[in-house]
Length: 277
Image 1: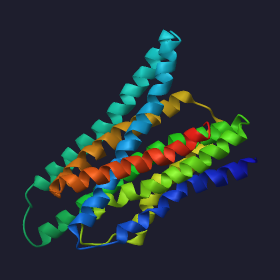
Image 2 (image 1 turned 135 degrees about the vertical axis):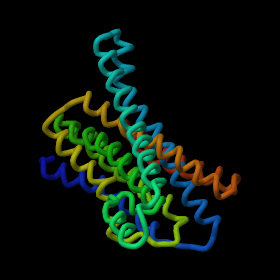
Image 3 (image 1 turned 90 degrees about the vertical axis):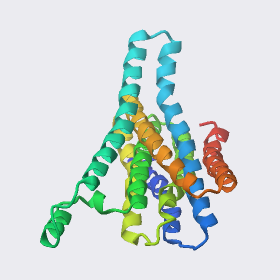
C-alpha cells in the first residue's frame, strides 16, 4: 500500500464521523426523543472514555509488568499530566466563562453593544453548541491517537492490520457524530451546516493528521499523551452530559438509551477484536 493510499484511507476513517452529524438538524417537540438522543450520546462517550483510558494505560502497564521502572515512571507521569491537562483546562476555562457572564454590564445602549463586540466566538455559542464543541475536541484528540496507530501499522509493513484498523475505526467514528450532536437536540435553534461541518473536521480530521505523522514518526510517548488528554477532556464532558440527562426527569428512558449508546460503542470496537487487531 502506497503512502498516498494509506493517507486517503486514513482520511476516510476519520470522515465517517459525518454520518451522524446531520441528526443535529432534526428537531422534534417530543421530550422523549430529545432525552434519547442526549442519553445515547452520553453512552457513546462513556465507552470512548473507557477506550481512551485503556489505550493510554496499556504502555504504562507493559513497562510495569516488565519491571522497567524508569520507563514505567516516565509513561505514568505522561499519563497523569495529560489526563490532568485534558480535564482541568476545561474546568478552569468553563469557570472563567461563567465569571465573565456574571460580570454586570457597563451600561445600556452603546456600552452594551461595545461589550458584545469583545466576546469571543466560543462565548456567543449556545450551551448545547459549546458542549458539542468540547465533545468534538475530545473526540479529535482520541482520533489523532487512532490515526497514529493506522500510520504506524502501515509504516511497519503490517498492511492487513492497517486495513482492519481503518475499517474498524471508520465504523467506530460513524457513531461519534451522534455523540457530538446529542447536546444540541434540546435547543430550539437548528445548528447550521457550516457549524456541523466544523465539528466534523475537529472530530474526524485528526485521524488523517495522525495517519500522516504515524507514517513517518513512531512515538509511543506521543500516543500516551494524546490518549490521556482526550480521556481527561471526555470525562469532563461526560459529567456535563449526565447533568443534561438528569434534567429530562425520565430516568428509565435515559438508562436504557445510555445502554444503547454504550453498546453501540462496544459493538464497533468488537469489529477490531474479532479481526484480531
